[in-house]
Length: 145
Image (cartoon, rainbow, N blue to C red):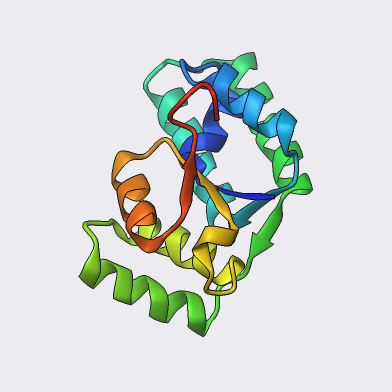
């Protein structure tokens, strides 16, 4: 099981350059862990594509349906004090945005404080850098992963 960031999930919903790589990772290990706000982050990305005209009409409806199906199958790390405290600490230690600090904090909680025990899938350079420094193995950047 791996922890998936929204940046790595969106290519599973809509066709992007990283779609094949993310599909390969998901096929190898279909059990996904995410943080509680991931569905909202993915919906935000899809809505932005729709507003910008890159996802129109039936394609948008299909994308939101895929998101709902994906969300029904993943496992969520719920918000809580441990996630919040860790996210605040990460904001002071790493150059992260709030949502990314929550992602990383939820991953650390999911790993029960042992980041080497849980792979993290992301396409976000800043999140990947912080996660590596915290001890996570990162998937998503190389085709061989």
